[in-house]
Amino acid sequence: MSNEIISELRKDYIYNLAIKEERVDGRSFKDYRELTIDTGVIDKAEGSALVRLGNTEVIVGVKIQPGTPFPDTPDKGVIITSLELIPLASPEFESGPPREDAIELARVVDRGIRESGAIDLSKLCIEEGEKVWMVFIDVHVLDDGGNIMDAAALGSIAALMTAKLPAERYDLGTDGDVPMRDVPVAVTAALIGGSVVLDPTNEEETVAGTRMTVISNQDGALSGMQKSGEAPLTTEQMNYIVDIAIEKAKEIREKFLEI
Amino acid sequence: MSKPEKFIEDGIRLDGRKIDELRPIKFEVGILNRADGSCYLEMGGNKVVAAVYGPREVHPRHMQKSTTAIVRYKYNMASFSVEDRKRPGPDRRSTEVSKVSRQALEPVIFVEKYPRSVIDIFVEVLQADAGTRAAGINAASVALADAGIPMKCLVSACAVGKVDDTLVLDLNKDEDNYGQADVPVAVTPGGNITLLQMDGHLTSDEFKTGLEMAKKGCADIYKLQKAALMAKYSDDTEGGSNE
Image (cartoon, rainbow over all chains, first blue to last red; front, side):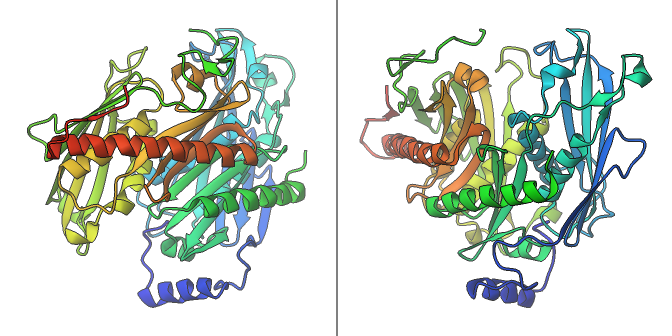
């Protein structure tokens, strides 16, 4: 992530390119790297997706099982999202319990799914107050090529869209689809110098002063946002990011995530 | 309390405020003896204390940076601060709040003045009533100034949200729980955004209008922060309260 060690020369190079409206890999500021999403890659999981976004590789597994609802929402299913930055994915990651970067990523992924109403939680109720479906979304980062945020969010929604409720296994009727209502898509921009670039690589993340993630729904409305990083943003930059993120999310949704 | 049928009647909210009105705010500077700087803040039903220690030696040593000071921010909720007792200690929410709050304040601190040292900010939420992270940032910003930490400016924070399809400033508990969106924002007096989060449902136009409302709210809070500091460090006794 952003504290990765790269040479000052390389940082200067990236920074100076950004001023000339160029990027190391030749992309324009609004271009994403090559994106592929393969679903159903883990047979044991109720839903899964492998996302490759440039050099970033993320696998998401969705496990679904019956459990007890929270006391304040007795008639609603439960979503639990976790993400770990395991040492396999980058020399910068260390083993141990998730730290703030991993917690932030997981909570933003969760926010997008929850706040967009992507899953109809009331349809995950089996018996009010007693038994509901619990949906565990586990994000495994395999290779950190930058912008884990968007890869994790895309993988999570793709895995959910293909997930099955394993009712037969628990004698609860026939298997069904997860009740989906929306397809939130996260788009992350990084601020390099004064420029806003989408889908930053890990190198660009080390140069970026801040990252801004915008999650938008099918209707083009916003369901979650997170600014992550020290550098401040102006209102103009903020509003510009919102506009291009909604546009880009639409593009990605149409290409990869149509129901 | 269950969801109210209507949050706004004739442009007035359930707690009697207009849609663009802040809750009552009261700052008190330098309330702790041991801390280098401190601030107590009441913002609506929120009661928070912020303490600043440092610049001081970094423990553990390996965290120190050779060219700048590091900033640590610990947001903690007292177990009695909420309706259902909160299990003491850090959790995932407070870890995230601490991270974004630290990053909201870091850009205004001259960290390069104190290499190899740490500036510790502790925020304790004694009573929570929606908008605790904004309250924490407002108090911490004043506590940093009280500690004499060189800063470019103060940082002010408040939330804007949506209830009954209407944008409202500085959500109260019910508006937060049952509302349609919540956008905490922190800005500098110059209008730079140092914290922005959002959850719920907003169109892009609503967001842009909401951001302007929040900036206006922050500008009012900034005046109170400044007044509170002036009250302590000058013979101007006006104080930092909008009551």
